[in-house]
Image (cartoon, rainbow, N blue to C red; front, side, top):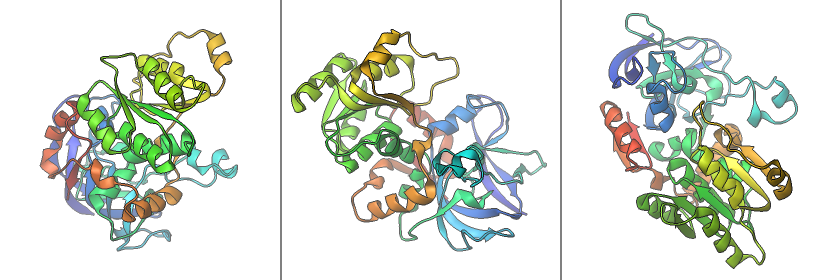
Amino acid sequence: MQQVKAVVARSKGAPVEVVTINVPDPGPGEAVVKVQACGVCHTDLHYREGGINDDFPFLLGHEAAGIVEVVGEGVTSVAPGDFVILNWRAVCGECRACNRGEPQYCFATHNATQKMTLEDGTELSAALGIGAFAEKTLVASGQCTKVDASARPAAVGLLGCGVMAGLGAAINTGAVTRGKSVAVIGCGGVGVAAIAGSALAGASPIIAVDIDAKKLQQATRMGATHVVDSSLSDPVEEIKRICAETYDGAEGADVVVDAVGRPETWKQAFYARDLAGTVVLVGVPTPDLKIPDLPLIDVFGRGGSLKSSWYGDCLPSRDFPMLVDLYQQGRLDLDAFVTEEIGIGDVEAAFARMHDGDVLRSVVIL
């Protein structure tokens, strides 16, 4: 067992604390990772606010990269010294999704069997089974994806959650390609990543929609060809107008990504897509929200598909190394997502900056 510093949320809404925790030696199928960088994600704030569940205390942090320090019995996929991005989709290889060749939908993903604890032995609930606002963390070995060791940890660690969710929503779930038009509603970190993914895939036009001028500027830097301030104009009509100017007869975008996750924005996405177009919901709704009231004939008559995207429908072993290679080639600007690098004691202040929309990502450097 080792003792390390980590960020813990003890109770609903209470400020997070930096405390000493106990990290067990890895058992069979487990690994201890020395964390180098971990992004501050909205999901961590949701945990602190009790929006995920009430299994306090939580060990926060999950969007991370680091070095494998030691592995448990039977681990062959990674070895001490490997540079890895942590993921929360360690596929089982045995469930019905895995058996039909769709491991990106694995229904029985793995986490470490042992629990990390506070000094007094109180068990911690690790955020998304990772808990990486810590100097070291214990994970299932399948949660470690080996990538190019020369990559910048603060940048590539973001593939562990938000950036992968957005890129994957466009490329994997929405099947964005050249010749397709895309609109993204909500230009926080996930939405801007969806824009970057659409640009990487060669889509045009790429329309960014938000009510915050700063976020629209960020979207433009990451590949948006057009921006719509939905506080000033009807985003549905603007998306239709822009797409019709590019493709004769277009009645909207081929793919519309809702990176907000509210009934109002989902309804906008539904009506802003072209006939036979696709809506992708990647923004996470709160449990109380309902699908908006729509005429069923509109669902039938417009055709296409209405999808949700969980973790960008990614397969970490396939997607992380490929995206890191694109980053290393200068084709995917992951550095642009890193607004600031902070210390382990600065997470609470980073939550406030994130809530105010001042950052794409604050990244804790350990």
